[in-house]
Length: 239
Image (cartoon, rainbow, N blue to C red; front, side):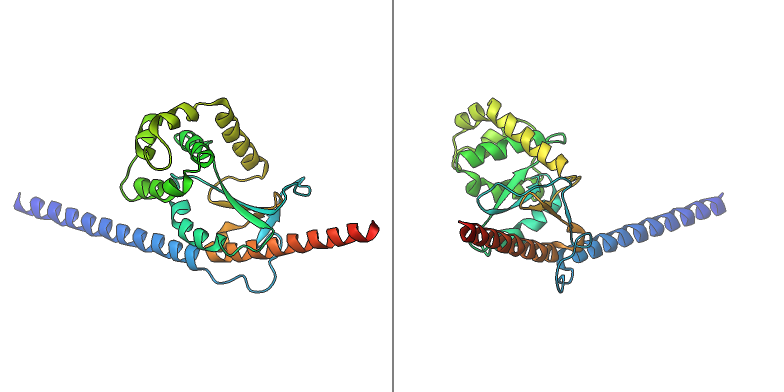
Protein backbone atom coordinates (compact mmCIF):
# COMPACT_ATOMS: atom_id res chain seq x y z
CA UNK A 1 0.00 0.00 0.00
CA UNK A 2 2.78 2.41 1.01
CA UNK A 3 4.62 1.53 -2.21
CA UNK A 4 1.56 2.40 -4.36
CA UNK A 5 1.21 5.71 -2.52
CA UNK A 6 4.86 6.55 -3.16
CA UNK A 7 4.49 5.69 -6.86
CA UNK A 8 1.38 7.85 -7.11
CA UNK A 9 3.16 10.76 -5.42
CA UNK A 10 6.11 10.35 -7.77
CA UNK A 11 3.84 10.43 -10.84
CA UNK A 12 2.09 13.57 -9.57
CA UNK A 13 5.47 15.19 -8.94
CA UNK A 14 6.60 14.43 -12.50
CA UNK A 15 3.36 15.79 -13.91
CA UNK A 16 3.81 19.01 -11.91
CA UNK A 17 7.38 19.44 -13.14
CA UNK A 18 6.32 18.79 -16.72
CA UNK A 19 3.50 21.32 -16.43
CA UNK A 20 5.81 23.92 -14.95
CA UNK A 21 8.28 23.33 -17.76
CA UNK A 22 5.55 23.76 -20.38
CA UNK A 23 4.35 27.01 -18.81
CA UNK A 24 7.90 28.34 -18.66
CA UNK A 25 8.49 27.44 -22.30
CA UNK A 26 5.21 29.09 -23.31
CA UNK A 27 6.16 32.31 -21.50
CA UNK A 28 9.55 32.37 -23.22
CA UNK A 29 8.00 31.84 -26.66
CA UNK A 30 5.45 34.61 -26.11
CA UNK A 31 8.18 36.95 -24.89
CA UNK A 32 10.39 36.21 -27.90
CA UNK A 33 7.52 36.77 -30.33
CA UNK A 34 6.72 40.06 -28.60
CA UNK A 35 10.33 41.21 -28.82
CA UNK A 36 10.55 40.34 -32.50
CA UNK A 37 7.23 42.06 -33.28
CA UNK A 38 8.16 45.16 -31.33
CA UNK A 39 11.85 45.63 -32.14
CA UNK A 40 12.53 43.91 -35.46
CA UNK A 41 15.40 45.33 -37.49
CA UNK A 42 14.88 48.25 -39.84
CA UNK A 43 13.71 47.60 -43.38
CA UNK A 44 17.05 48.71 -44.79
CA UNK A 45 16.90 50.07 -48.31
CA UNK A 46 13.78 50.48 -50.38
CA UNK A 47 10.55 48.81 -49.32
CA UNK A 48 9.45 46.20 -51.82
CA UNK A 49 6.07 44.86 -52.81
CA UNK A 50 5.13 41.48 -51.31
CA UNK A 51 7.98 41.59 -48.77
CA UNK A 52 6.99 44.84 -47.08
CA UNK A 53 3.60 45.77 -48.48
CA UNK A 54 1.00 44.76 -51.01
CA UNK A 55 -1.18 46.78 -53.34
CA UNK A 56 -4.93 46.56 -52.74
CA UNK A 57 -6.54 44.75 -55.65
CA UNK A 58 -8.39 47.18 -57.90
CA UNK A 59 -7.14 50.22 -56.02
CA UNK A 60 -7.23 53.48 -57.91
CA UNK A 61 -5.85 56.87 -57.04
CA UNK A 62 -6.96 58.18 -53.68
CA UNK A 63 -9.37 61.10 -53.78
CA UNK A 64 -8.29 62.36 -50.35
CA UNK A 65 -6.69 65.80 -50.26
CA UNK A 66 -3.78 64.40 -48.25
CA UNK A 67 -1.86 61.15 -48.39
CA UNK A 68 -3.82 59.43 -45.67
CA UNK A 69 -2.50 56.71 -43.37
CA UNK A 70 -5.24 54.69 -41.68
CA UNK A 71 -4.79 52.35 -38.76
CA UNK A 72 -7.56 49.78 -38.47
CA UNK A 73 -7.67 48.77 -34.82
CA UNK A 74 -9.81 47.71 -31.87
CA UNK A 75 -9.70 48.72 -28.22
CA UNK A 76 -10.07 45.04 -27.37
CA UNK A 77 -6.87 44.13 -29.25
CA UNK A 78 -3.79 43.83 -27.02
CA UNK A 79 -1.46 44.21 -30.01
CA UNK A 80 -3.20 47.48 -30.89
CA UNK A 81 -2.71 48.67 -27.33
CA UNK A 82 1.00 47.74 -27.37
CA UNK A 83 1.49 49.45 -30.74
CA UNK A 84 -0.31 52.63 -29.74
CA UNK A 85 2.49 54.52 -27.90
CA UNK A 86 4.85 54.06 -30.83
CA UNK A 87 2.13 55.10 -33.25
CA UNK A 88 1.31 58.20 -31.19
CA UNK A 89 4.93 59.36 -31.32
CA UNK A 90 5.31 58.54 -35.00
CA UNK A 91 2.20 60.32 -36.29
CA UNK A 92 3.60 63.68 -35.21
CA UNK A 93 6.50 63.18 -37.64
CA UNK A 94 4.32 62.97 -40.76
CA UNK A 95 5.34 65.48 -43.42
CA UNK A 96 3.13 68.24 -44.79
CA UNK A 97 0.57 66.80 -47.15
CA UNK A 98 0.12 63.58 -45.17
CA UNK A 99 -2.42 62.76 -42.46
CA UNK A 100 -3.28 59.98 -40.03
CA UNK A 101 -6.51 58.62 -38.59
CA UNK A 102 -7.73 55.54 -36.76
CA UNK A 103 -10.68 53.41 -37.84
CA UNK A 104 -12.16 51.07 -35.23
CA UNK A 105 -13.40 47.81 -36.71
CA UNK A 106 -16.75 46.48 -35.55
CA UNK A 107 -17.04 43.09 -37.20
CA UNK A 108 -16.48 40.87 -34.16
CA UNK A 109 -18.62 40.47 -31.07
CA UNK A 110 -18.31 43.31 -28.57
CA UNK A 111 -16.13 45.30 -30.97
CA UNK A 112 -19.23 46.71 -32.66
CA UNK A 113 -20.30 48.83 -29.70
CA UNK A 114 -16.71 49.98 -29.22
CA UNK A 115 -16.54 50.92 -32.90
CA UNK A 116 -19.68 53.02 -32.58
CA UNK A 117 -18.29 54.62 -29.42
CA UNK A 118 -15.11 55.54 -31.31
CA UNK A 119 -17.15 57.29 -34.00
CA UNK A 120 -19.25 59.15 -31.41
CA UNK A 121 -16.22 60.27 -29.42
CA UNK A 122 -14.49 61.41 -32.59
CA UNK A 123 -17.44 63.51 -33.69
CA UNK A 124 -17.72 65.03 -30.22
CA UNK A 125 -14.02 65.91 -30.09
CA UNK A 126 -13.64 63.62 -27.07
CA UNK A 127 -11.17 61.05 -28.40
CA UNK A 128 -8.08 62.70 -26.92
CA UNK A 129 -9.67 62.51 -23.48
CA UNK A 130 -10.70 58.87 -23.79
CA UNK A 131 -8.46 57.01 -26.24
CA UNK A 132 -5.67 56.00 -23.87
CA UNK A 133 -8.14 55.64 -20.97
CA UNK A 134 -10.05 52.97 -22.86
CA UNK A 135 -6.91 50.98 -23.64
CA UNK A 136 -5.75 51.16 -20.02
CA UNK A 137 -9.13 50.23 -18.59
CA UNK A 138 -9.52 47.18 -20.81
CA UNK A 139 -5.99 45.82 -20.69
CA UNK A 140 -4.63 47.01 -17.35
CA UNK A 141 -7.76 46.74 -15.24
CA UNK A 142 -9.69 44.07 -17.17
CA UNK A 143 -12.71 46.30 -17.63
CA UNK A 144 -15.32 45.06 -20.10
CA UNK A 145 -17.43 47.42 -22.19
CA UNK A 146 -19.95 45.14 -23.81
CA UNK A 147 -22.89 47.53 -23.67
CA UNK A 148 -23.63 51.20 -24.16
CA UNK A 149 -24.42 51.87 -20.51
CA UNK A 150 -20.98 50.89 -19.23
CA UNK A 151 -19.31 52.93 -21.93
CA UNK A 152 -21.53 55.92 -21.20
CA UNK A 153 -20.61 55.76 -17.51
CA UNK A 154 -16.93 55.51 -18.35
CA UNK A 155 -16.73 58.49 -20.72
CA UNK A 156 -19.12 60.71 -18.76
CA UNK A 157 -17.40 64.00 -18.02
CA UNK A 158 -14.42 63.26 -20.27
CA UNK A 159 -15.23 65.50 -23.20
CA UNK A 160 -18.82 64.26 -23.47
CA UNK A 161 -21.78 63.82 -21.15
CA UNK A 162 -23.42 60.46 -20.52
CA UNK A 163 -26.81 61.35 -22.00
CA UNK A 164 -25.26 62.93 -25.09
CA UNK A 165 -23.20 59.80 -25.66
CA UNK A 166 -26.20 57.50 -25.26
CA UNK A 167 -28.30 59.60 -27.63
CA UNK A 168 -25.59 59.55 -30.31
CA UNK A 169 -24.41 55.94 -30.23
CA UNK A 170 -27.60 54.56 -31.79
CA UNK A 171 -27.88 57.18 -34.51
CA UNK A 172 -28.22 55.63 -37.99
CA UNK A 173 -25.30 57.71 -39.27
CA UNK A 174 -23.03 56.16 -36.61
CA UNK A 175 -24.08 52.64 -37.55
CA UNK A 176 -23.53 53.45 -41.23
CA UNK A 177 -20.06 54.77 -40.53
CA UNK A 178 -19.06 51.58 -38.71
CA UNK A 179 -20.47 49.51 -41.58
CA UNK A 180 -18.43 51.58 -44.06
CA UNK A 181 -15.25 51.02 -42.06
CA UNK A 182 -15.86 47.27 -41.95
CA UNK A 183 -16.55 47.20 -45.68
CA UNK A 184 -13.31 49.07 -46.41
CA UNK A 185 -11.47 46.65 -44.13
CA UNK A 186 -12.82 43.66 -46.03
CA UNK A 187 -12.26 45.18 -49.46
CA UNK A 188 -8.61 45.74 -48.57
CA UNK A 189 -8.35 42.01 -47.90
CA UNK A 190 -7.55 42.54 -44.24
CA UNK A 191 -8.10 39.85 -41.63
CA UNK A 192 -6.59 41.19 -38.40
CA UNK A 193 -5.70 44.31 -36.48
CA UNK A 194 -3.65 46.40 -36.14
CA UNK A 195 -3.40 47.07 -39.86
CA UNK A 196 -1.94 50.05 -41.70
CA UNK A 197 -3.19 51.23 -45.09
CA UNK A 198 -1.58 54.08 -47.03
CA UNK A 199 -3.45 56.22 -49.57
CA UNK A 200 -6.24 53.62 -49.91
CA UNK A 201 -3.73 51.64 -51.95
CA UNK A 202 -1.00 50.00 -49.90
CA UNK A 203 -1.42 47.47 -47.09
CA UNK A 204 1.70 47.30 -44.93
CA UNK A 205 3.03 43.91 -43.84
CA UNK A 206 2.75 44.04 -40.03
CA UNK A 207 4.62 40.73 -39.64
CA UNK A 208 7.93 42.52 -40.15
CA UNK A 209 7.55 44.31 -36.79
CA UNK A 210 6.12 47.60 -35.60
CA UNK A 211 9.03 49.94 -36.24
CA UNK A 212 9.88 48.45 -39.66
CA UNK A 213 6.18 48.72 -40.58
CA UNK A 214 6.26 52.44 -39.80
CA UNK A 215 9.48 52.77 -41.84
CA UNK A 216 7.59 51.24 -44.76
CA UNK A 217 4.72 53.68 -44.23
CA UNK A 218 7.18 56.59 -44.34
CA UNK A 219 8.55 55.37 -47.67
CA UNK A 220 5.10 54.88 -49.17
CA UNK A 221 3.96 58.31 -47.99
CA UNK A 222 7.06 59.91 -49.53
CA UNK A 223 6.44 58.01 -52.76
CA UNK A 224 2.82 59.19 -52.96
CA UNK A 225 3.71 62.79 -52.16
CA UNK A 226 6.34 62.80 -54.90
CA UNK A 227 3.86 61.31 -57.38
CA UNK A 228 1.37 64.06 -56.55
CA UNK A 229 4.00 66.77 -56.95
CA UNK A 230 4.96 65.33 -60.34
CA UNK A 231 1.33 65.19 -61.41
CA UNK A 232 0.72 68.78 -60.30
CA UNK A 233 3.82 69.90 -62.21
CA UNK A 234 2.67 68.12 -65.35
CA UNK A 235 -0.79 69.65 -65.04
CA UNK A 236 0.68 73.14 -64.68
CA UNK A 237 2.91 72.61 -67.69
CA UNK A 238 0.06 71.42 -69.88
CA UNK A 239 -2.00 74.49 -68.97
